[in-house]
Each structure stands twice: as C-alpha cells, then as structure tokens.
Amino acid sequence: MNTINYIQIQKENSKHVEDAKALWLPFTAELKKHKDERFYVDQVTDNLMKRIGIQGLRDTMHFELMYINDECIGVCNFAIDLGGIKGLIDKGYGYIMGFYITPDKRRLGHGRTFFQHIENVLIADGANYIYLTPDEVTGLPFWESMGFVNSHLIDPDEKLPIFIKKIK
Ligand SMILES: CC(C)(COP(=O)(O)OP(=O)(O)OC[C@H]1O[C@@H](n2cnc3c(N)ncnc32)[C@H](O)[C@@H]1OP(=O)(O)O)[C@@H](O)C(=O)NCCC(=O)NCCS
Image 1 (cartoon, helix red, strand yellow):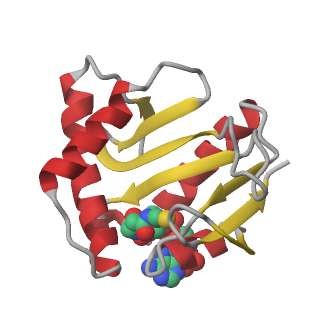
Image 2 (cartoon, rainbow, N blue to C red):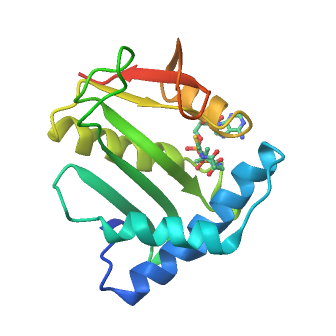
Image 3 (tube, helix red, strand yellow):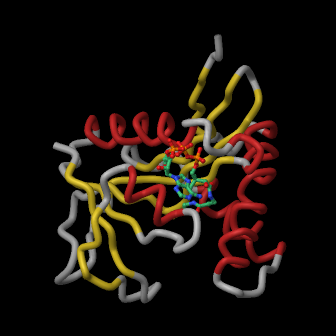
C-alpha cells in the first residue's frame, strides 16, 4: 500500500528546497510551453526562493510537497487570500497559485488526492470558496473535474478567467 505524506516546505531544510526546485522548474517550464512563452531558469528559481522564504510568516499560507513512499511527486502553493481582488473576489477565499504532479505519475488519481487534502486545509483555515486561474491545457480539464466552474471574471494581473469552487 502507498504511504502518502504532505510536507510543508521549510526554507532551512535543504532537502525540501531541492525537492521543490526539482518540481517547480519543470512545472513552470510546462506552463510556459503551453502558453508559448519563454522560460528563464534564474528568474523562476529566484521567484521560487522568494515563495519559500515567506513560508511560515502566517498560518494560512502553504507551500507543500506530496510524497508517495518517500518519492516527491507533487507540489502546491496555496493560501487564504487576505486581500481578495477588488470588486471581483472577496477576502478570505482560498487561492491556489501553483499545482503540479510529475508527468510519469499522472492520471493515477494523485492530483485528486492532493487536491482533497488542500481543500481540507483551506476549509480548516476558514475558506468557503477556492479560486484559481487554470492552465488551459492540463489545468482546465483537471480543475473542471474537481468541481471548479468558470466565474466569467477575469484576473486583472494574469488576464485569465477565474474559476471558483464552493467548498463549504
Ligand atoms: C493538472 C495535473 C495536476 C493533474 O494531475 P493528475 O495526477 O494527472 O490528476 P488525476 O489523475 O487526479 O486526474 C483527476 C481527473 O482530472 C481529469 N484530468 C486530469 N488531467 C487531465 C488531462 N490532461 N486531460 C483531461 N482530463 C484530465 C480527469 O477527469 C481525471 O480523472 P480520470 O483520470 O479518472 O479521467 C497534472 O496534469 C499537471 O501537473 N499538469 C501540469 C501543471 C498544471 O497544469 N497544473 C495546474 C495549473 S492551473
């Protein structure tokens, strides 16, 4: 039987940082490829290190790795959005900023299992809804199958449609 563990990335833990890099770089490369955009390793690494650096500053910010039998196969950065998006998303929503399952472990239900865990964490954090802007290639079919629906609102920064799921 598989043993599943979710680990909160800690910046002082070099294994966490290496495991996060091993997934976050291909994750970003894949999404950039889907959008036909360029990918700069240094920029993405800096951005990742900033995200890791702010972990632990508040309890409702999460950057987690998913391990199956000690193999790191997934990563997710998610939080309670304390500010919301003016006129579009109220504060207090759960927000998923990055979600990835390594390609050789896909379509085995691991993404669903990881998302169920994330949903439970965000419910415990007090969220009634989760929002995100799906990647159009692999993200969209996955998030729709997780119950997210197109709100027909557009994220003003990313210029992408916002999908929402009611979780409570
Ligand atoms: C999206 C992603 C996390 C899905 O992970 P996964 O482990 O393959 O997902 P699951 O096996 O749990 O899939 C659950 C359901 O989602 C749907 N789904 C997942 N990937 C799909 C795809 N590529 N095409 C169509 N439907 C898909 C299916 O309904 C699937 O159920 P099924 O396999 O019984 O048909 C993974 O493809 C990934 O990391 N993609 C690149 C990064 C990305 O797009 N992240 C989301 C950013 S918004």
